[in-house]
Length: 306
Ligand code: HMG
Ligand code: MG
Image 1 (spheres, helix red, strand yellow):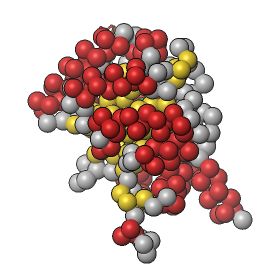
Image 2 (tube, rainbow, N blue to C red; image 1 turned 90 degrees about the vertical axis):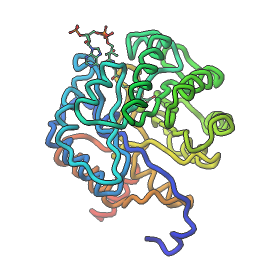
Image 3 (cartoon, rainbow, N blue to C red; image 1 turned 60 degrees about the vertical axis):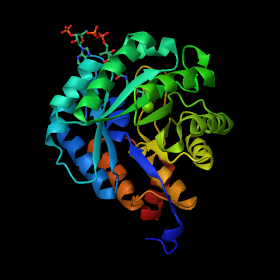
């Protein structure tokens, strides 16, 4: 622990690599490797891990084995395993597999919602309301994702008012937190800061997460803009893997090792051992056959071979 750890502020890193990262990989990663990936992330200190999704296996075959994975992961005190669901059917599958932390998704853009979920936003909100009611009855925790919160591959720029309107609906359903997705990585730090300020004023910082894809290289700067405004939950993906299969051109999330490096350098502590995250990215490259894109990984690898 750094000497000045007492002065560091806590931040929460929400790891989406096993879901957002692997859903977009061309290779189908065997369940044994996914299991080891999650175990490695836990060992690195990650406490919120989205292990997969319960979507239609025909649309996203990479996630077809999430049931098996969820059943096999050893539960550990203090570690929350999350899964993404697109509708009530997905929620039922998650519950049967023993998952009690649920991410539910819809888009700010109507066209992206239809492409991603084959439903209108209103229809998705009806599904989310059903999930929310059941989750509350069963004592489960759920977060809402609002995709295309800054821009849509089909509709272009998205007005903050459109995003806030949907966030209001999710809050009215008692979402524990809402993660705002820059699905295609078009946000700028000014836009992120402007939206974050309005969101914090409305909902409080505790309920807001940022989910930033790094398509144009602004992911980390955008994360910093959000931190400066008071946001303390940032989604990231080990090795910088990821993308949305229904958002053409979307690149990976900000890399977990890059985010941890940013947090440490900016006075935050998320309780994560960066070298273990780097080891996990190396293992992903050498054993699983995926290509890390995180900058810190490249730096650490170059240092090792120097
Ligand atoms: P659909 O075909 O419209 O579904 O798909 P349906 O309700 O009409 O039902 C058709 C069949 O699918 C039925 O089976 C249902 O039972 C079945 P049949 O009676 O024909 O045998 N079905 C399901 N099966 C398994 N799991 C389910 C499920 N639901 C229905 N959950 C659906 C609608 C939403 C399922 C489909 O469009 C889908 O799976 N979409 C998911 C796409 C996806 O995974 N996108 C990526 C994740 S979102 C993301 O990455 C963004 C995020 O990272 C934030 C950001 O970056 O902004 C979160
Ligand atoms: Mg995403």
